[in-house]
Structure formats: structure tokens, C-alpha cells
Image (cartoon, rainbow, N blue to C red; front, side, top):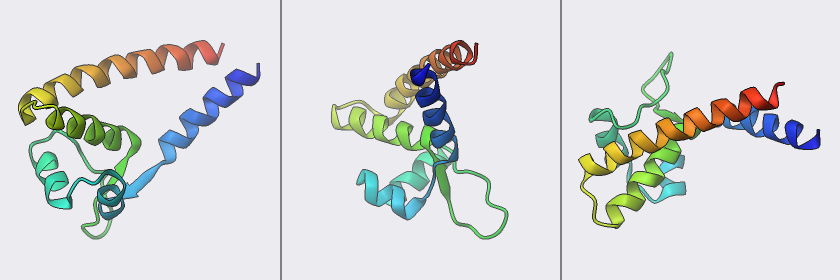
Length: 105
């Protein structure tokens, strides 16, 4: 029973995690220019901002950035890394949905 509570906390925390582009750059060591380029190519997406042009990213997109960076460091092209990440994220989302449904039973 304790595990169910811990799992739901993680989901809640991850859904609320939102970080500005500068902080993402500092945390991930990915230059802001590169983050913007990936967004232009629609590999990642910032959260809609009501006012101003401050880009903010959620956990899902930060995770994508880290995975892409890792694959680029291993020699993948941006396009092949993007496709691999897209497939991996779909698998992760399906798995998390199953876990979330199982935890709410």
C-alpha cells in the first residue's frame, strides 16, 4: 500500500515540474540555442506561455533533451536520435499509463 502512495507522489511531482530554458540549459549542459533549434524542428516543445516569450519545459521534454544529448554524443544524427527518442517516449508513456491504472485500483 505504501508503494502506491509513493508512485502517485512521483506522478504528481513530475506533472508539476516546470523549468525555464536557462535552468534547463544549466542543468543539462545543453546550450539554449540548441534547445531552441530542437524546438523549431518540433523534437521538443515548450509549454504555452500566457505572457512574454519565456520558454518553460516540463519533465517529459527535459527527459527528451537528455536522451537526445546522450544519443548525439554516441554518434547518432539529430534525425535518427529524434526518431529513437520518439519511439522510446511512446513506450515509456504506455508503461506509465499501465502503472498509473494499476496503482489506482
